[in-house]
Image (cartoon, rainbow, N blue to C red; front, side, top):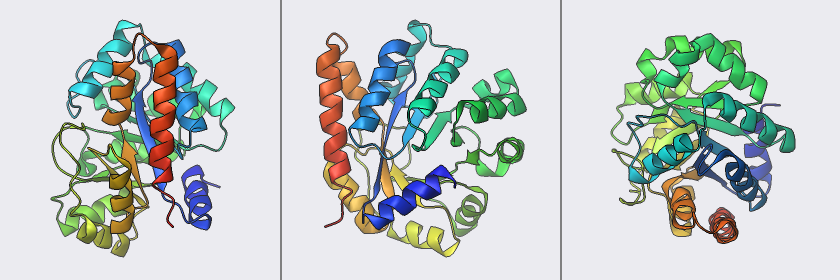
Length: 269
């Protein structure tokens, strides 16, 4: 069975939502990055959203740009990312793994070749941040060929036609933006999302995960209450890495506590 579907079903049985952290692969260096990913999963992450570092991350705020720079400075290449992904998949056969990245990285290795590498490494989904759903045909075709879910963003200002297109073309989950702009906890998540969720459900979209600006347990609760299947948190996770670069033990300890508290918020009483 598909890993996302299986995970959403397991969570539904336990009356829980999904908590999905984001980190950049190779931040602050490839070796510690693996320990960070271990910590995320072992502290309760239901799935992973991972970035492949790219020198010009358009949709990212300063926190995630910092992570990208650290990873690139540590020599993280796409080839190293795929090696690390293969290790993570081997260790955690059931955890859904999504990539969040930019089109240039896909073009660099050729679209078909890129999705083939994803399949070989055990990746479940790919969100190409700078490819709008209407221009995604080539990416979708390659994704489908290799059994990878294409993920699309449902923006907060989307009209009905866009929501229908996103619903029709998405697989795995739908990435629902809590607000427009770049990623980051610098600006808090907005929550006027109920009508968007109702539209996505009416169009049979995959389960919606709310992202952008999610940094506290209460926001996870609010997202679930509004009808989302879960929440994605990136900048808040990366800030913990950034804050503790000189102290690995402290970093992993704080990450574990943060993930546990966010996961606890997904348990509906």
